[in-house]
Image (cartoon, rainbow, N blue to C red; front, side, top):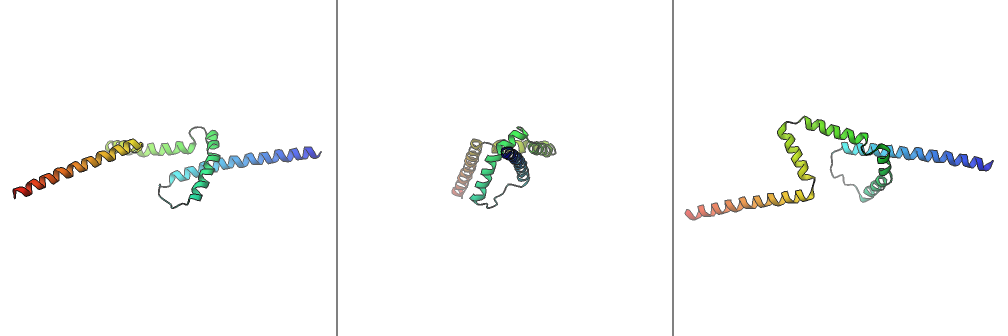
Length: 139
């Protein structure tokens, strides 16, 4: 009789734990959604907060992906909003946004662009310096 009562209590606690885990997964997805709405900026967070967030992310992140599938409703919403805003731009702005996102998505592309822009600025500076020097000689 005591054993049956203890089994019932254990089953009840397991159900509570499963409910809490499901609630945590849902809250994690909501937190990600709300973070995606905020502009990215330095908030001066300490390493303790970052470590706590990383711990929560590692604990419940995989479960939330398993529960909601590869693309959650929040991710779909975010992609739809991005597509809607992109569709509202004219052709020139759309090309600019897509090319800049392509350029900024890769570290190699960013380093190449920085080197290329630096070389072009140096070339213009040297040409202007030489023209100014030759003009000064003629005076």
